[in-house]
Length: 409
Image (cartoon, rainbow, N blue to C red; front, side, top):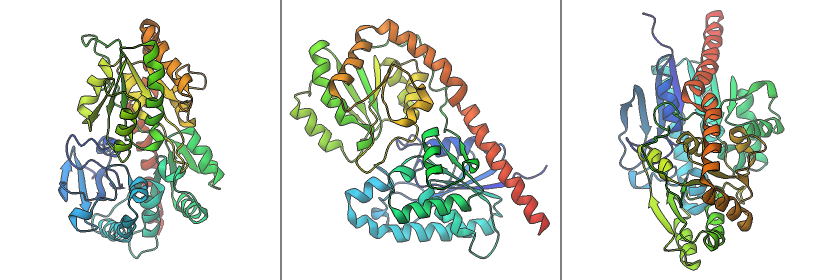
């Protein structure tokens, strides 16, 4: 039996353990590639995580980049947010980068890696590009941008690094059409950029359950508590909602650096009886939340830093469970909802946002029909069976090209 080609995945955000509430989309993709590749993931260590393990057939290696108590650069908000919150964490960046370069170089040599998939242009894409200058095996790499690396990291030198990475990559993928336009604006040839969204399990996990009664008044927010998620705008709209639907409530599933400020806002607005902070919720519990909610709200906005949602798969998760939605109208959601979906609103307008929320709450039958139609449309585009196949084809093509080049040499 012919051995599977070796795929090395470079990532920063990755599950630290089973049921980790941190985003798990990189692992969800990696485990679906194991039928075609022998997959090894190299990601940073975090307190409480093991340094080496096998998760769902994926070899996971977590590299140490600081004393364990200080390994806090990645989780609870992401690298960009953590650097803005605590300037001292810039001291962690050199070790974070250099150790990953060193460990990746060793893995390429020892495991005879055939192709690399780098998630995020900076830093993983830069690391993959630098590996091509080091002695030893030259491995083609595919780089995927998820949003924050493209939108939030701004400036002349950062743009030059992003362009350098994209031009050195064998292929570039982005998760939405809006991001493709941004890559082309940086000077990357359009022919080199592919739109390949991450996926959602719309077959087994995020599916409707008619036996679960849907609430009439409980709204739901799911996501990191960071500026681009727009939660503070949703809270500003809540008094307007309550004037028309006095028994409405909001559950907030998530954690992040803005939590204390958001709790203060709830108290200042007198919303304590109507807003519940649910904390970090494991992925396994999310479907039940979506199935019970009267309405899912994702009030995405562009943050002051320029950061914005790369795609918004949380919307697909909710829609997969048949939950009505209201979403902030950032460019990326057009790939999910299209151009004219009535659920897209400007969250910075509290009255307009409240009107959209009330319309769903007072007419649940219409909202349910719209949610059913949306689910059917999204299933053919975002289910993991399709999304993983797209990445499988991109990575296989680059592996085949690399193998042919090595054979010629």
